[in-house]
Length: 158
Image 1: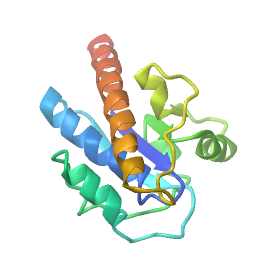
Image 2: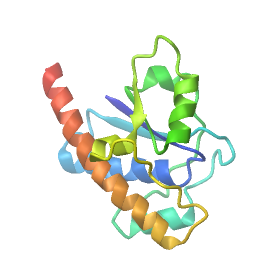
Image 3: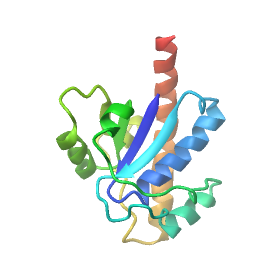
């Protein structure tokens, strides 16, 4: 099972989701059967580390984002991943516009897995430190819901 988290620049929300979800997978004993990555729909930050504020907020919760580097969404991602989960409607629209007709991957919003259908993870880039904590709160809730969903799906595939 392969999950891709998608935001605009891949330096705040999607790497935070990747880091949190990797940790949750380890805690759930699923790290060997589920792989995770993140990317941005835009290419402005390719090769850059996550925003220092995102790293600091994540580190405060025991999640290390320092090894992650931004990359841009690529057409092959629709083949490589089972789930492409956007942080907001704009990025979801970009995914849908680029999605090949024969794509079997599930494309949707991350917060759908937090029981908050249609809700966006707000972009904290231009705001204060509290925005990064809010992103973490939302991503943690969604990660727990996504873990539950994946457990059910993996059980059905056995």
